Image 1: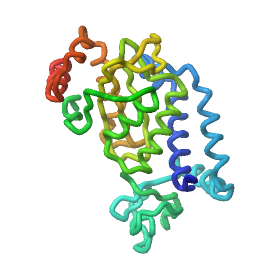
Image 2: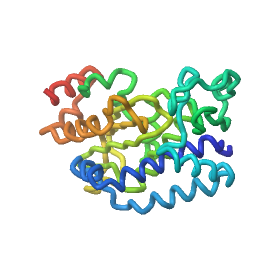
Image 3: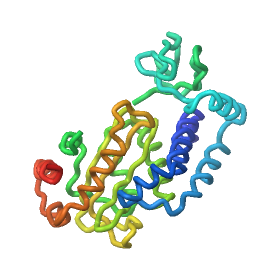
Image 4: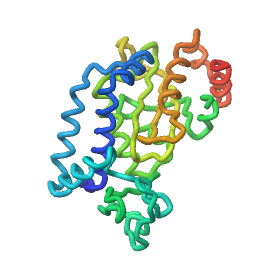
Length: 117
Length: 150
């Protein structure tokens, strides 16, 4: 089954967070002290490319636009509240009422919303 | 946060029946009681993490871990495989003991790295391999976690 655009965006944000983490020398040092190896770090770029190629170009453009403003362009909705800006989402949100993987933006901060948990 | 507080009957499997790295990851994810979509995404994320460098730290241990939006709090699981599975570990030997650690990208409590560190430390406890091999029940495992961290 084709993956939803929302799931792809979530996956992309996870990969971008991982990329940021492994670019941080201090964090990598902590991991290495624990015994983990990051001997193929460059593969993160391939993984990111793989996901972005499956995204709708317009949606990806919007994601990048939001990413200029916020470190994390996606924000969870918990109890009807966007946890990016802590403002209530519209009551008719399909994401909230029907648990559907639809693309919805926070009316207040513009982040892309997903259901948490 | 003590390791013992994170584990219970539902996220510990002492007789893991899995053939290969992917099956191990899927079984560990299965212990987290997530919905199917979340399980699928988490599996993909863990695979991508493994691609950057194996989380098989040697001496029979592997600690697959990642941060993911599909969870809203720190989640852990433990599994023991009787014969061991090839996990591309740094010492080239099969892994028998698996700790899964997953956390959301942002946690208020920020337990992820400290818990990962505690688990890695636990794996270095003297004679831990023989102790883990001889466990009979989940309670034995919890007791071992308790003793090792005290």
